[in-house]
Image (cartoon, rainbow, N blue to C red; front, side, top):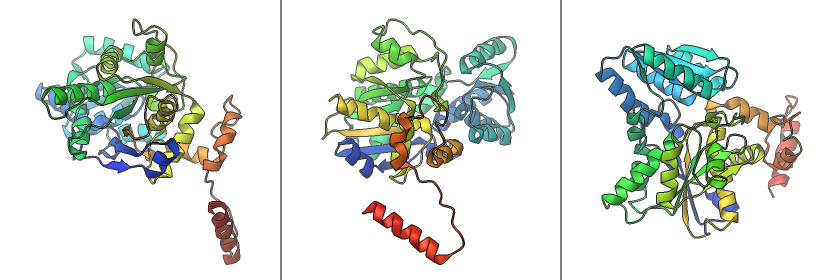
Length: 361
């Protein structure tokens, strides 16, 4: 469906704010179903079709289900989606519905959906299309290969990826190692993984247990795409960190919201989970892990319109109302751009314009 060849943007305002010379965003949200899942799904769904499966299935926080349903429809297959009830953005849910999937909202979290799905595929002729599918990982290497081609095969110093189920970081890391072994690049970028504080099992695995074990948790973050408490690909992601010399970091809910608005101010829209990359970069820069003159690439995994309600609520100022984040969120007011309600009166519009001009001066 025309997946791949996603744009690489230069984030000038964000670079200045963070204190690095060269900051780029590889926007995987510009794929056909508006997320990074498409490059892996086209390969994995083709595998299912080749093997003669009539049904494909996934557990999802939203992006996987949208992508799988679309590619199943194009391949004249049926799709089954298991999603956690009330824990998925309507923008993503609407996609799987429109693409004809049998969509089941289960009264559990993402990891509960995975457990049911694993039992299902053992009993029914249904092809599993979650990121444990090896074809998914192979397809998702596309982003890294495209990125290096766009940079003229000059490897950046850092690549920063959101951490949810950790399949994407595993795929990108695998591609980097293979390109290095093939001598397409002369050095390995450091690949770092950022998680939300409220969905941070991999961060705790590395920081508290030195990678020896991962303790599942009940994830709860407004960045719904990475609301995963028991990531399937954590061992692969750990190897990526070790091989590339990257870091793992965690960021708060307010830091995610602020970073999303800052990326938006550069004219690039992304979903909340993508914004953890910029929020994490700030911490990596503050710790000295990222140096001012180094080149950094953020992997933006999903489009702004995947979760428009988040954006509207942030700019209206009620995203964190009545929560423990309400007070810390006060510092994000300067980033909010709520619509102004005016009478249909030219002087009123001119007054609003002049007030805005004073604010920018």
